[in-house]
Image (tube, rainbow over all chains, first blue to last red):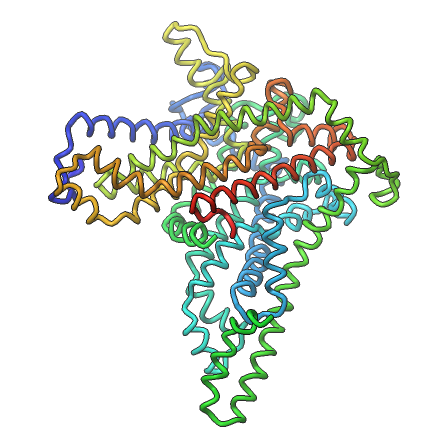
Length: 295
Length: 326
């Protein structure tokens, strides 16, 4: 199995070890993939086949997109999908912008007030304010049931900030000085030198923000009325807690949504992650490690 | 202040500029100051987020010492001194949530913590790069899936009408009762954490393993050390700092176990099995409307937690490790 790059000094691995490793790897891959496969298959099967098989299908005999048609025809799920996409897009943009500004200012030694700001930012990491006071702040600001309540309270993540700051600090000082002698201001240096050199870190931090916004449901359950919910909170209510969908799809409320429909919601909530994932995966080690090592 | 000045790169730029005519030097300095102010403005603009949502909220913790009535607001509500804390110390439900939190954290430490390490060693031992990268990609994936989806997937696979029970039924073996069973809840949440984060957790170990100089292995092999001795004398010392660091940091964070994970499943198994400190705060405050009391419990957790992280960091430094901050 592993004949490709074995150095000369290394013993030939024993067959038993090889087989053991292969089995372990197959198990790991199966444990991750099979659950995803079964929800995808169930969402593509007909409701009759799912009921007959006891609630799930591993391979649909007659694949159909009925479940997807049901939920994407303008009901609760369609709206929630729109909310999730909007919050993720706007939130990620704002978060990246603020994090870049803060990280850059905190990475440069010539910024007025950066030392106390750095200390105050790091302190929040040690002592988070707590759920109840955070809730009351959002309430006092009049943000309840506004989409801003899903973005502003989580605008900057300290870990992401530290990752980016570490990356910016790793850029050689000579580049800054050369640009400065050419007459470039700090913002121009950020735009033309620092950001292009930090693509890997930006990709990773952007992904972390986007995933956090896309996956967030708790704040929506705290702050938002049910007709403004994002997809994950809809998923939580109708699939995990099994409440009925009062929706155009069934016409009547309180009936638990059909299994195929539930699984289709689950698939739609997962797919965006599966799509962006391969593109950003190559940056993970690079981006995460710089942060981890610097912090 | 002197130290601050010494660190400024502006100084080195200025000293370099001293070889050029005095006019240019002046211009240089003026630019320097202007730029710093522009960045300061951007920095403080973004920092406003921390002021409002962290320090504002931190100040809101005063309601832990008040009988908070929404109509009277945070400042208008009556002071009650430490009575919220006295009530908390006498509250069996609160202490039950503390015990649950620590039990789950310890279970994770024992059963979750070694998994990423073992997986990292397995992945590192693979010499076939394509296979290794493929398995890595698959193993990282669950980390990016939300807790809602993880819980739904576990229901789908292990639930009454789930896949595993379907196969068991077909095979004529008695079915297993895991989802919604309070007795099985703690192992279940540990299994969920392993499924979601063990793959992602390998990253830091793999990085430490890749730092090892290949020549060390070669030299050891030439000296006659077999695979086990090489593992013991080369691999282990290389990952020891990371292991110690992560272990200490996890101990410092022992009062936090997945809040979202517990909240999603608490209704199904009941508070007896699933109440942790964070869900206690949530149910007392947000659900029960007893904000002052809930804030007191939250503040208690925050203070002890910060002390533990601080202590853990001290221990890390004492052991010669880096810690999370300096």
